[in-house]
Amino acid sequence: MTTGENIHRINRGDTEILLVGTAHVSRQSAELVEQLIDEERPEAVCVELCQSRYDALTQRDRWQQMDIVKVIREKRTSLLLSQLLMMSFQKRIAERFNINPGEEMLRAIAAAARTGVPVLPVDRELRVTLLRTWRCMGFWTKAKFLSEGLYSLFLTDEITEEEIEKLKQHDILEVALQTIGEKMPVLKEILIDERDRFIAHGIGHTGYGRIVVVVGAGHIPGILSNMDRDIDIEALNRIPEPGRWARLFGWGLSAAVIGLFVAGFFTSGAEGGLNMLKWWSLITASFAALGALALLAHPLTVLASALAAPFTTLHPLIAAGWVAGLTEVTLRKPQVKDLLDLPGDITTVRGFFSNKITRLLILVALVNLTTSVGTFVAIPVILRFL
Image (cartoon, rainbow, N blue to C red; front, side, top):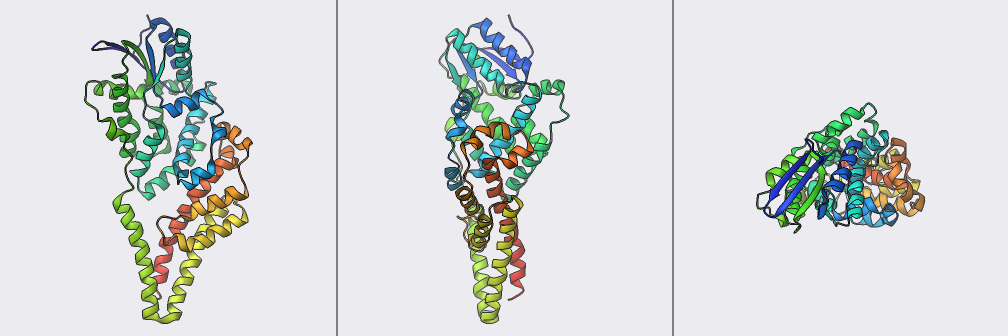
């Protein structure tokens, strides 16, 4: 019988649960999972996957179905970029030690198929997790998170296989965040703690009498502590509305700037008001163009970013980065090759910046960031004309 410190046997009512903690890039974990299922012959196998991640793991051509234009129009570029950055960290460690990321999940799925039992994804949908995370972060936290994520592309070169085995004490998402170099309690609460409760609820309501549960070892303490608690699944699946204060700040800032223009015309005359408009347009346009130029975007994308910035900075529901992204995707539409190469390209700095899809996502985020900086640079400049 397979035993070990990462295997927990739990009897809960009429259900026997074999909870195994793994490192998501560990060769030993993959072998342990396969051996455990073959020996124990459970009635079902639960995996730390949501349905969309399960489909992505078992359907390798999933990237070919991505509609990048839809992603930009639905304002999901930053979410997708965050997801790809975390996947990049995991894949680079996995490739360093010649193991597929998520191989322990693939082995679990294969072993379940051999024994003729169902596989049950018990994790929360990734989109819900990321949206809940994103909505809880402020603008500058998002910017720092993405910038640190890009910086992490240069890391992991000195990680040894012994250190990889130590990942059994932590969830891969938590390790990724630590590598990025920022300790954000709100991220841990949503990425780790909430999912512990969600998974605990899922494995407690499978309806099977004997199950094997395969999860990252970092989730084990949280799952065990939540097994006998009443959990509000609806609350864990609820996507928060954008913060009221954030909306008020956005509209308030726009109203304040427009008010400054009006005040400029009244107090400084037409010449003063026009100077305010001129400098506002010049500064915000320059910063937006700078963001597009930094990614070597198409000249028309740079122009579109510059032309849009003076107007988008005055309207909280429109962003110069989205204009830049839609323009770039029209002029340099990603090819099937970019979709096929995406899983490999996200593992290198060069690939991340050369693949048209990831480059496009970075472009949107960067132009939004530089335009926002331009807004705060322009405000004190136009105040001088009052």
